[in-house]
Image 1: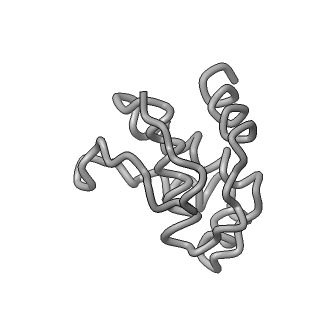
Image 2: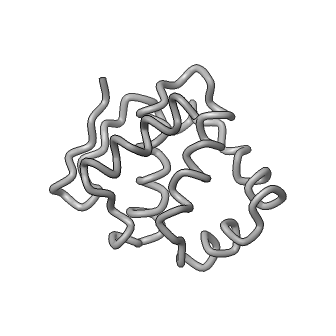
Length: 104
């Protein structure tokens, strides 16, 4: 089970999947299906609700990768690469996101 360490501001992600094995085509669907989320991502101004939207698409385009790793990837995208540490979820928020991704 992959776990992110919530005390290190996104620097301790489990890199269980090599970078070249991720399908990043979800980005194109985000642009079409959730254009406002896409625009916020482009501007590095995402909202907390965008975590679920992005994680859900990452899961869709990477069905062979564990849901938890897909959520971690979304968090890495938003927190590290988009430099938005304010989006860092609490442990309870993380668990809720994971539950929603797994069970709708």
